[in-house]
Length: 104
Image (tube, rainbow, N blue to C red; front, side, top):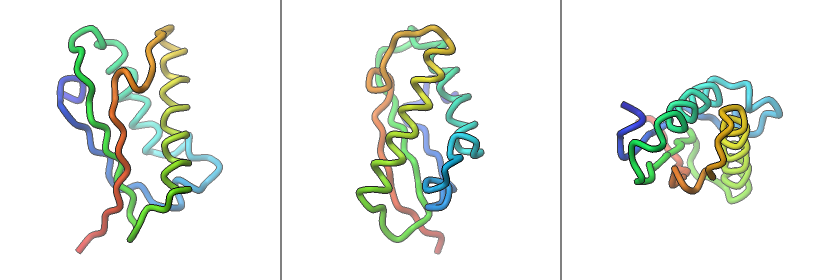
């Protein structure tokens, strides 16, 4: 379903996850890798972009935190695309948003 949905929301990301040097080894990165592999495998099914919404547990997402997360996600996508021998850009398939969320 993640391949044909209009949006994918990844929740549970913490500031520590983003700031950690090993972000690519987090459960969130593994989830995104699986999502990217599926999207690349079925990229010809649809030409519409998917909204990819990353939710960080914090009061506010700083500019530097958002920039770091965006770079990490795009780097992960590029590695996944290279692995699949696909020459498509992240921006061709996804509209990335980063949001601050809190449990109430």
